[in-house]
Structure formats: structure tokens, C-alpha cells
Image 1 (cartoon, rainbow, N blue to C red):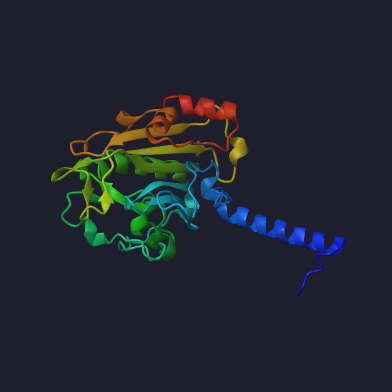
Image 2: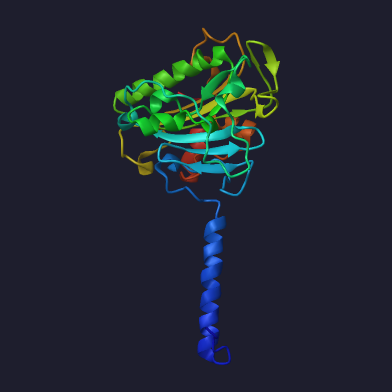
Length: 280
């Protein structure tokens, strides 16, 4: 249809069309995509989008994570945890994530075979085992990174169990976890990468947990006195008998290590207080 550009009505119509197009483009490029997910109630740690291969946003009903195509591992994962997510289904099988963009390498479970590192979940298997779809979602390889067996089966597992114990007591948790640094030590010594160089091995794993009194209490219930847990655990052998409490730190310290901005949806005074204190 030819627009009547020679008159005022035509100019107004054309201007409206341009505004609509620009608004659509802005929405597509907006780095806040995914913020409506309950798993991002506390804010998104990085500027992850659907357009950045090194900080690629994956939003699922079970969790939200940032994936790094070049490193073959997640940067971070964020999830809500309350009793509604807990079940007793058996473990699913590890699978490649076929939903990655076309042309990206899809990490396979066999890429970890013989590496000396466990296939380490960020969102734990036992945190998502009420339904089959929930269970399958956490066994996708985009939720997995190389984890030293003594880390994975020692303090890291004990912290995961501690969190679920809190949930069974009626608490609701908001959890963020990831890896940082280059190179960890597994059963076969220190490695920078595995899987023929396609998968980076982090030097340490970190986790942040914010503990709410009850499910559904929302972000408004978080105060400077709200319990938080922050740990930074070396990705190495020799830790299996260690308690997770040995690796407690502050959220500020993890921010310095990772460059991420945690708890950004909280009012600044509360955010500063929670991030500065040593974890519970």
C-alpha cells in the first residue's frame, strides 16, 4: 500500500510504524530478557542474552543459566528451591543439549569419560526430581561442568544436602552457582581443558544461597538480617572429608572473583549488607 507521505496523516502513520519497529528491536536486544522468571527473583548476575555466545541466556521452567559456547560449560545457574521441586524419581541420563543454536558444538556425556573429572551439576539432580521433565532438564550437558570427584562428592554434595534439609524444614531458597578461574585437579592431575580441548575446567566452584522463611514470601521479605550462604571451593582432590563450612566467604568476595553483580534486584542498602557479611 502506498503511504500518503505528502500530508500530515501520512507522516504520522510512518512515524508510528518506525516507533513500533524500533520498540520491537529494543525488546529483542534487551539484556533483561528472562528477568520475569522466578529463578531470577534476586536479579541476573551478568548481562546474559540470547545473542552472546560467551554469555548465552538459557531460560527454562526449572532454572535459568548462562552458557559459554567457547568454554563448553555454564557460567552460572540460578534457581528457586522449595518443597514443590523435591521428589524421589531415579536419576536421568546425561544428554547433549539439542536446543543450543545451530552450528554450536553440543557437549556429549562421553566427552568427560576418562578425564578424571565428574560430570558436576550446577542445578543438582535432587533439587529437580519431582517430574520426569524436571529431572531431564538438569541432566542436559549445558548444566554440567568438570568437577573434581572429591569436591563433587565431598563438601559440595554436603552443602546441597544441607540446602534441601532447610527446604524440608519449610524454607524457600534462592541459589546461584558457577565456576571461576582456569584449571582444576582431578583424578589424573591438573587439567585446563577436557574433551579434546572443547570443555574448560574451572579452578574453583562458588555458590550463593539466600534463605527465606517460607515459600512465597517474596523479595519484600528480604532484610539485612536474612541468612545467606556463600562458598568458594577449590576444584581439586583432597577435599572429600572436608565440611562445606570451611569454604565460607562473602558474596562481595565472589563478586570480586567473578566480576558478576549479585542480588541486584534488592534495595542497595540491603544488598550491600548481605554481600559484605560472612556467610551463615
